Length: 93
Image (cartoon, rainbow, N blue to C red; front, side):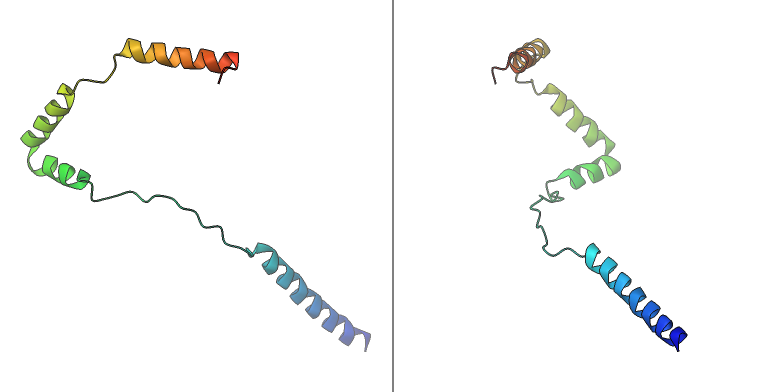
């Protein structure tokens, strides 16, 4: 008779442990993240396909992009970033 109760107790205990473990894994609230998805329709695919099927157009695009003058020189950029880091180090920001 004791073995009958022991078997029932073991089965009930097993189900309680399984239920507790499943409840512990479940999220009570869902956190919604507002992440931006990449836009595939910005023309990048057409540029890639154009470069695959018309390599001379790809070279033209590379040349046009290389002719665009940067808004600041490398020295100006390095001076600006150095100044910003000095402000951070001194606690001015």
